[in-house]
Length: 315
Image (tube, rainbow, N blue to C red; front, top):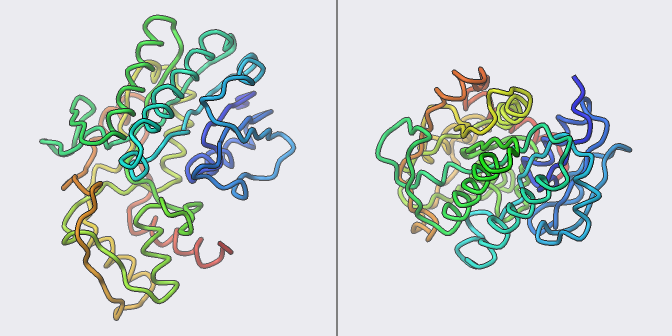
Protein backbone atom coordinates (compact mmCIF):
# COMPACT_ATOMS: atom_id res chain seq x y z
CA UNK A 1 0.00 0.00 0.00
CA UNK A 2 1.31 3.42 -0.97
CA UNK A 3 -0.84 6.50 -0.41
CA UNK A 4 1.38 8.85 -2.42
CA UNK A 5 1.13 12.49 -1.33
CA UNK A 6 -0.89 13.11 1.83
CA UNK A 7 -1.91 16.48 3.28
CA UNK A 8 -2.58 16.73 7.03
CA UNK A 9 -3.94 19.95 8.53
CA UNK A 10 -3.45 20.25 12.27
CA UNK A 11 -0.47 17.93 11.92
CA UNK A 12 1.34 19.49 14.89
CA UNK A 13 -1.51 18.64 17.25
CA UNK A 14 -2.08 15.53 19.31
CA UNK A 15 -4.05 13.39 16.86
CA UNK A 16 -2.54 14.98 13.76
CA UNK A 17 1.06 14.31 14.75
CA UNK A 18 0.28 10.69 15.62
CA UNK A 19 -1.49 10.31 12.27
CA UNK A 20 1.60 11.66 10.50
CA UNK A 21 3.72 9.05 12.30
CA UNK A 22 1.33 6.36 11.11
CA UNK A 23 1.45 7.62 7.52
CA UNK A 24 5.23 7.94 7.08
CA UNK A 25 5.83 4.27 6.11
CA UNK A 26 3.00 4.24 3.55
CA UNK A 27 3.47 7.58 1.77
CA UNK A 28 5.93 9.24 -0.60
CA UNK A 29 5.29 12.74 0.69
CA UNK A 30 3.46 14.35 3.61
CA UNK A 31 2.52 18.02 3.74
CA UNK A 32 1.53 19.48 7.11
CA UNK A 33 -0.33 22.75 7.61
CA UNK A 34 -0.57 24.02 11.20
CA UNK A 35 -0.51 27.56 12.59
CA UNK A 36 0.76 26.25 15.96
CA UNK A 37 -1.97 28.12 17.85
CA UNK A 38 -2.43 24.99 19.94
CA UNK A 39 0.02 22.62 18.24
CA UNK A 40 3.72 22.08 18.91
CA UNK A 41 6.29 21.90 16.13
CA UNK A 42 8.46 19.61 18.28
CA UNK A 43 5.97 16.75 17.90
CA UNK A 44 6.26 16.71 14.10
CA UNK A 45 8.35 13.66 13.16
CA UNK A 46 11.70 14.22 11.49
CA UNK A 47 11.52 12.92 7.93
CA UNK A 48 12.89 14.05 4.59
CA UNK A 49 9.45 13.37 3.11
CA UNK A 50 7.66 15.90 5.34
CA UNK A 51 7.04 19.52 4.34
CA UNK A 52 5.70 21.78 7.09
CA UNK A 53 3.86 25.06 6.55
CA UNK A 54 3.42 27.17 9.67
CA UNK A 55 0.30 28.80 8.30
CA UNK A 56 -3.40 29.17 8.95
CA UNK A 57 -5.97 27.45 6.75
CA UNK A 58 -7.48 30.92 6.36
CA UNK A 59 -4.39 31.87 4.33
CA UNK A 60 -4.80 30.30 0.89
CA UNK A 61 -1.89 32.00 -0.89
CA UNK A 62 0.10 28.75 -1.01
CA UNK A 63 -2.79 26.30 -1.41
CA UNK A 64 -2.70 25.81 -5.18
CA UNK A 65 0.81 24.36 -5.24
CA UNK A 66 -0.02 22.03 -2.35
CA UNK A 67 -3.34 20.72 -3.65
CA UNK A 68 -2.41 20.07 -7.26
CA UNK A 69 -0.80 16.66 -6.67
CA UNK A 70 -2.30 15.56 -3.36
CA UNK A 71 -3.83 12.07 -3.11
CA UNK A 72 -5.38 12.16 0.37
CA UNK A 73 -6.40 14.98 2.70
CA UNK A 74 -6.87 14.56 6.45
CA UNK A 75 -8.38 17.79 7.74
CA UNK A 76 -7.90 18.05 11.52
CA UNK A 77 -7.12 21.77 11.96
CA UNK A 78 -9.78 23.39 14.16
CA UNK A 79 -10.50 25.55 17.16
CA UNK A 80 -11.38 23.34 20.11
CA UNK A 81 -14.31 23.49 22.52
CA UNK A 82 -12.49 25.38 25.27
CA UNK A 83 -11.29 28.06 22.85
CA UNK A 84 -14.61 28.38 21.04
CA UNK A 85 -16.57 29.82 23.95
CA UNK A 86 -14.03 32.61 24.39
CA UNK A 87 -14.06 33.77 20.78
CA UNK A 88 -17.08 32.64 18.77
CA UNK A 89 -16.09 34.62 15.68
CA UNK A 90 -12.66 33.01 15.51
CA UNK A 91 -14.29 29.63 16.00
CA UNK A 92 -16.53 30.30 13.00
CA UNK A 93 -13.61 31.51 10.86
CA UNK A 94 -11.34 28.52 11.48
CA UNK A 95 -13.87 25.72 11.71
CA UNK A 96 -16.25 26.81 8.95
CA UNK A 97 -14.42 29.19 6.61
CA UNK A 98 -11.15 27.28 7.00
CA UNK A 99 -12.87 24.03 6.09
CA UNK A 100 -14.59 25.74 3.17
CA UNK A 101 -11.18 26.90 1.93
CA UNK A 102 -9.93 23.32 2.07
CA UNK A 103 -12.94 21.98 0.21
CA UNK A 104 -12.83 24.67 -2.46
CA UNK A 105 -9.16 24.10 -3.26
CA UNK A 106 -9.72 20.35 -3.22
CA UNK A 107 -12.47 20.89 -5.78
CA UNK A 108 -10.42 23.20 -8.00
CA UNK A 109 -6.99 21.61 -7.87
CA UNK A 110 -7.38 18.15 -6.36
CA UNK A 111 -7.53 16.26 -9.62
CA UNK A 112 -5.80 13.24 -8.06
CA UNK A 113 -7.72 13.40 -4.78
CA UNK A 114 -8.93 10.02 -3.58
CA UNK A 115 -10.29 11.06 -0.18
CA UNK A 116 -10.99 14.11 1.98
CA UNK A 117 -11.33 12.90 5.59
CA UNK A 118 -12.81 15.49 7.94
CA UNK A 119 -12.21 15.13 11.69
CA UNK A 120 -15.45 16.15 13.36
CA UNK A 121 -16.65 15.68 16.91
CA UNK A 122 -19.14 13.85 19.09
CA UNK A 123 -19.90 17.24 20.68
CA UNK A 124 -22.51 17.50 17.93
CA UNK A 125 -24.72 15.19 20.02
CA UNK A 126 -24.80 17.54 23.02
CA UNK A 127 -27.22 16.13 25.58
CA UNK A 128 -28.29 13.14 23.52
CA UNK A 129 -31.52 11.32 24.28
CA UNK A 130 -30.51 7.77 23.31
CA UNK A 131 -27.45 5.67 24.11
CA UNK A 132 -25.34 4.44 22.46
CA UNK A 133 -25.94 7.49 20.29
CA UNK A 134 -26.29 6.99 16.54
CA UNK A 135 -25.17 9.35 13.79
CA UNK A 136 -28.70 10.61 13.17
CA UNK A 137 -28.92 12.51 16.48
CA UNK A 138 -28.02 16.18 16.89
CA UNK A 139 -28.08 18.66 19.78
CA UNK A 140 -25.85 21.68 19.21
CA UNK A 141 -25.03 23.17 22.61
CA UNK A 142 -21.88 25.23 21.95
CA UNK A 143 -20.21 27.41 19.32
CA UNK A 144 -17.80 24.53 18.74
CA UNK A 145 -20.45 21.90 18.01
CA UNK A 146 -22.34 24.38 15.83
CA UNK A 147 -19.30 25.26 13.73
CA UNK A 148 -18.18 21.64 13.38
CA UNK A 149 -21.64 20.54 12.29
CA UNK A 150 -21.79 23.41 9.78
CA UNK A 151 -18.43 22.29 8.38
CA UNK A 152 -19.83 18.76 8.07
CA UNK A 153 -22.68 20.11 5.98
CA UNK A 154 -20.23 21.77 3.61
CA UNK A 155 -18.35 18.49 3.30
CA UNK A 156 -21.58 16.74 2.34
CA UNK A 157 -22.48 19.56 -0.04
CA UNK A 158 -19.15 19.39 -1.84
CA UNK A 159 -19.60 15.65 -2.22
CA UNK A 160 -23.08 15.97 -3.73
CA UNK A 161 -22.39 19.03 -5.91
CA UNK A 162 -18.75 18.57 -6.95
CA UNK A 163 -18.03 14.91 -6.16
CA UNK A 164 -15.26 15.75 -3.68
CA UNK A 165 -14.76 12.33 -1.99
CA UNK A 166 -15.46 13.40 1.59
CA UNK A 167 -15.72 11.26 4.72
CA UNK A 168 -16.68 12.57 8.16
CA UNK A 169 -15.42 11.02 11.40
CA UNK A 170 -17.03 12.08 14.68
CA UNK A 171 -14.35 11.50 17.31
CA UNK A 172 -15.01 10.98 21.01
CA UNK A 173 -12.56 11.90 23.80
CA UNK A 174 -9.39 10.60 22.20
CA UNK A 175 -6.48 9.91 24.55
CA UNK A 176 -3.06 8.28 24.43
CA UNK A 177 0.58 8.86 23.61
CA UNK A 178 1.37 12.23 22.12
CA UNK A 179 -1.22 14.12 24.17
CA UNK A 180 1.01 16.61 25.95
CA UNK A 181 -0.13 17.52 29.47
CA UNK A 182 1.76 20.80 29.11
CA UNK A 183 -0.84 21.89 26.56
CA UNK A 184 -3.55 23.77 28.49
CA UNK A 185 -6.20 22.35 26.15
CA UNK A 186 -5.27 18.69 26.58
CA UNK A 187 -7.85 16.12 27.64
CA UNK A 188 -8.68 14.89 31.12
CA UNK A 189 -6.51 11.75 30.88
CA UNK A 190 -3.38 13.81 30.28
CA UNK A 191 -4.35 16.20 33.08
CA UNK A 192 -4.82 13.33 35.53
CA UNK A 193 -1.46 11.80 34.62
CA UNK A 194 0.31 15.12 34.94
CA UNK A 195 -1.27 15.72 38.35
CA UNK A 196 -0.09 12.36 39.66
CA UNK A 197 3.41 12.81 38.23
CA UNK A 198 3.71 16.18 39.97
CA UNK A 199 2.12 15.04 43.26
CA UNK A 200 -0.97 17.18 42.77
CA UNK A 201 -4.60 16.26 43.47
CA UNK A 202 -6.87 15.20 40.63
CA UNK A 203 -9.25 18.02 39.74
CA UNK A 204 -12.80 16.92 38.94
CA UNK A 205 -15.38 19.39 37.68
CA UNK A 206 -18.84 18.73 39.07
CA UNK A 207 -19.44 15.50 40.98
CA UNK A 208 -17.57 13.27 38.52
CA UNK A 209 -20.69 11.38 37.44
CA UNK A 210 -20.58 12.76 33.90
CA UNK A 211 -19.66 10.05 31.40
CA UNK A 212 -17.59 10.06 28.24
CA UNK A 213 -16.68 7.53 25.56
CA UNK A 214 -12.88 7.48 25.89
CA UNK A 215 -11.14 6.20 22.74
CA UNK A 216 -7.49 5.14 22.48
CA UNK A 217 -5.35 6.90 19.89
CA UNK A 218 -4.23 3.77 18.00
CA UNK A 219 -7.84 2.80 17.34
CA UNK A 220 -8.65 6.30 16.11
CA UNK A 221 -5.69 6.27 13.72
CA UNK A 222 -6.93 3.04 12.18
CA UNK A 223 -10.34 4.64 11.66
CA UNK A 224 -8.68 7.45 9.71
CA UNK A 225 -6.70 5.03 7.54
CA UNK A 226 -9.61 2.66 6.88
CA UNK A 227 -12.00 5.47 5.99
CA UNK A 228 -9.43 6.86 3.56
CA UNK A 229 -8.83 3.55 1.81
CA UNK A 230 -12.31 2.00 1.75
CA UNK A 231 -14.46 3.40 -1.10
CA UNK A 232 -17.62 2.48 0.82
CA UNK A 233 -16.85 5.29 3.27
CA UNK A 234 -17.19 8.09 0.70
CA UNK A 235 -20.00 10.52 1.42
CA UNK A 236 -20.76 9.08 4.83
CA UNK A 237 -20.58 10.07 8.51
CA UNK A 238 -19.16 7.74 11.16
CA UNK A 239 -18.92 7.69 14.92
CA UNK A 240 -15.47 6.76 16.20
CA UNK A 241 -15.74 5.60 19.80
CA UNK A 242 -16.05 2.41 21.82
CA UNK A 243 -19.76 2.15 22.51
CA UNK A 244 -19.00 2.24 26.25
CA UNK A 245 -19.32 5.11 28.70
CA UNK A 246 -17.11 5.76 31.71
CA UNK A 247 -17.64 8.41 34.36
CA UNK A 248 -14.87 10.88 35.09
CA UNK A 249 -14.73 9.54 38.64
CA UNK A 250 -14.34 5.97 37.35
CA UNK A 251 -11.59 7.19 35.05
CA UNK A 252 -9.80 8.85 37.97
CA UNK A 253 -9.93 5.62 39.98
CA UNK A 254 -8.45 3.67 37.05
CA UNK A 255 -5.58 6.13 36.73
CA UNK A 256 -4.93 5.99 40.48
CA UNK A 257 -4.93 2.19 40.30
CA UNK A 258 -2.47 2.11 37.39
CA UNK A 259 -0.08 4.45 39.19
CA UNK A 260 -0.65 2.66 42.52
CA UNK A 261 -1.25 5.86 44.46
CA UNK A 262 -4.33 5.01 46.57
CA UNK A 263 -3.83 8.09 48.74
CA UNK A 264 -4.13 10.47 45.79
CA UNK A 265 -6.53 13.28 46.64
CA UNK A 266 -9.47 14.46 44.57
CA UNK A 267 -10.49 18.11 44.44
CA UNK A 268 -14.03 18.84 43.25
CA UNK A 269 -14.67 22.16 41.53
CA UNK A 270 -17.73 23.82 40.06
CA UNK A 271 -18.60 22.90 36.50
CA UNK A 272 -17.12 25.10 33.81
CA UNK A 273 -19.13 26.77 31.07
CA UNK A 274 -18.09 23.96 28.72
CA UNK A 275 -19.26 21.21 31.10
CA UNK A 276 -22.82 20.96 29.82
CA UNK A 277 -23.02 17.32 28.73
CA UNK A 278 -24.00 14.66 31.26
CA UNK A 279 -23.51 11.52 29.17
CA UNK A 280 -21.57 10.54 26.07
CA UNK A 281 -21.59 7.07 24.54
CA UNK A 282 -21.43 6.50 20.79
CA UNK A 283 -22.89 3.74 18.69
CA UNK A 284 -20.19 2.27 16.43
CA UNK A 285 -22.50 -0.09 14.57
CA UNK A 286 -22.42 1.94 11.36
CA UNK A 287 -18.64 2.14 11.01
CA UNK A 288 -18.31 -1.50 12.03
CA UNK A 289 -20.87 -2.68 9.49
CA UNK A 290 -19.69 -0.55 6.59
CA UNK A 291 -15.88 -0.50 6.77
CA UNK A 292 -15.22 -3.16 9.41
CA UNK A 293 -13.67 -0.88 12.03
CA UNK A 294 -13.81 -1.68 15.72
CA UNK A 295 -11.65 -0.53 18.64
CA UNK A 296 -9.05 -3.06 19.71
CA UNK A 297 -8.11 -1.52 23.06
CA UNK A 298 -10.31 -1.41 26.15
CA UNK A 299 -10.03 1.69 28.32
CA UNK A 300 -7.82 0.18 31.02
CA UNK A 301 -5.33 -1.20 28.49
CA UNK A 302 -5.20 2.14 26.72
CA UNK A 303 -4.61 3.92 30.02
CA UNK A 304 -1.79 1.50 30.89
CA UNK A 305 -0.11 2.11 27.54
CA UNK A 306 -0.54 5.84 27.94
CA UNK A 307 1.03 5.74 31.40
CA UNK A 308 3.99 3.81 30.01
CA UNK A 309 4.46 6.49 27.35
CA UNK A 310 4.29 9.34 29.87
CA UNK A 311 6.73 7.57 32.18
CA UNK A 312 9.35 7.12 29.45
CA UNK A 313 8.96 10.36 27.52
CA UNK A 314 10.57 13.70 28.28
CA UNK A 315 7.73 16.21 28.00
